[in-house]
Length: 84
Image (cartoon, rainbow, N blue to C red; front, side, top):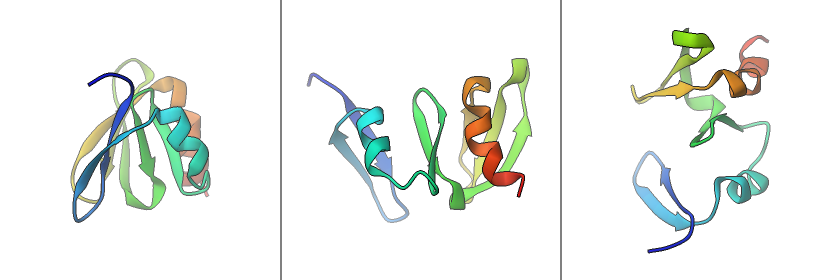
């Protein structure tokens, strides 16, 4: 395989698609999906908890229990939704 591939995690199944994260982001609702790391985007409705971590990064826990690292460079993207 060559090129950019993404793995989309949905409640019922995961899918591999050929696209860049930047391209996918342009097609999603920016009020519902935010980038939290150069490798990850999340649905803000699935975010259960945000905890401070090392070096300004944070740990994001999703409603299914999975945890992802949120880079300090993308911290403002998600926090603008959680501070309301």
